[in-house]
Length: 277
Ligand SMILES: NC(=O)c1ccc[n+]([C@@H]2O[C@H](COP(=O)([O-])OP(=O)(O)OC[C@H]3O[C@@H](n4cnc5c(N)ncnc54)[C@H](O)[C@@H]3O)[C@@H](O)[C@H]2O)c1
Image (cartoon, rainbow, N blue to C red; front, top):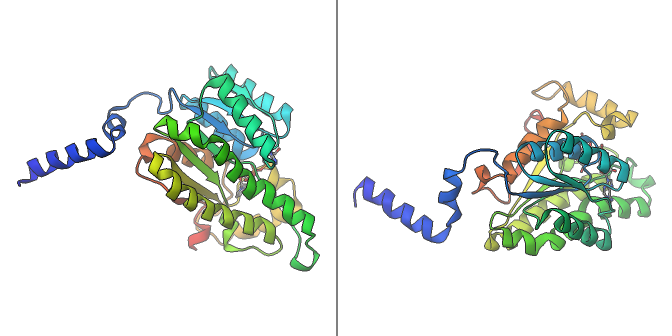
């Protein structure tokens, strides 16, 4: 078989197995047009930037946050920029919240194609002082929430034919001083990403994680101890500055799009090189 016919043969085989690959190659225009995205914790910070970016790329966006007024403000920002959005406030740390948020998103915009598990909380406490209730609270929001959201959206994502989940983990999976619950929750989220990718990949759903380094948001700026940690960290990492929310959103938009059609189970570090120093 010469090179030309080998290529043709391979293309035919690919077409048989993964019909959307050829379609993907031909797509043009806003890359998420026709898609519905649901972003948790999108009322501010990184989640807000992700919601705005996915809307800019053409997706209709369901904006979740436990702070209802913040979710409504982001919905308005998207609408005034010409995008389509709905706010779906609710607490994603509990099963009822996950189910009602997912149902509300689908009822308003149609079945969900893209789920971004961004909502997260930080808690600083040393091992000996760490209260069990704080450990549980952090794990419920940062790890149980993404699992329950994936469970609630799984059927819709599978039916989409282009379903994608992006989990926002953290470069803190390396293990930081004084935040064991947070670090463990994000480490667990990376493993959950791989489990979901393995199981849901058979149904055409891709599942990836983004691990931000220090990003200038209220989570970092609002806590003097975390801010100091961040300032110390950026002095020794290759890119000597904190990241900005839209720099994380760029990575999420790519992973959610067909441009990443053969990427699943991956962890993309958006951390100024911190984890590679
Ligand atoms: N900022 C950073 O440096 C950094 C670094 C690595 C990872 N992250 C991760 O990125 C994500 C966003 O971080 P951020 O800095 O924008 O934080 P943030 O605190 O500014 O925003 C988090 C948002 O999540 C919402 N939220 C919290 N609990 C919720 C719940 N139970 N249900 C629904 N919404 C809830 C909050 O109301 C808030 O609007 C988090 O998962 C965080 O762990 C942030």
